[in-house]
Image (cartoon, rainbow over the protein chains, first blue to last red):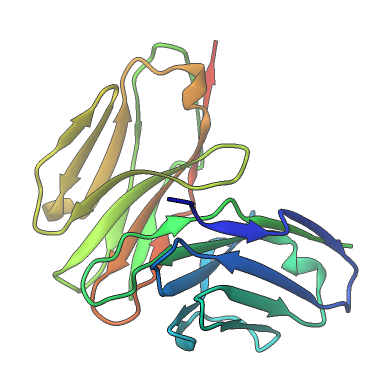
Length: 114
Length: 115
């Protein structure tokens, strides 16, 4: 069974640009969660999508957005990039049903904003 | 509010020493899960263990062991006879079942095992 894949693995952008990151969950998983990891703030929850709907959202500005497609693949977008957006972005997939759901993490996309 | 605290930012030991990573959590929920993840330099989070709030039994897996104590809201992780390959950043995390199913992570402990 293939794991969670994230593309691209590395990305370099400049301030003011926008970026789109992609996450393909494990087959059969309907929930995709995104996390941002920075040296200063650690690992923080961005948002979760389930069946094409945003189900939960963390405390991030509106420049951070996402969506999920009918095949459960998810994208997150960051507009008007700032230096502080440089981070490792991790996505996790799970079945998303009620009760406990194991979350499986992808390898991450490392974004550098210059 | 939910919170996970890993008081040790960095730990450095010599190979073969035992080392314990501390984790203290806060939640008002009665049903939750606790996790430990390992993050090597490649960045991927590697799942190590999951514990639910109703199971306080300690667990041992090879050189790894975990001590869960609800009375002190702690979930500590011990590596016995550490090896250089254990060098990584280790995260403790809390997952609530009710409401938003999001992981709340501690700040991580960078463990360096010196040969």
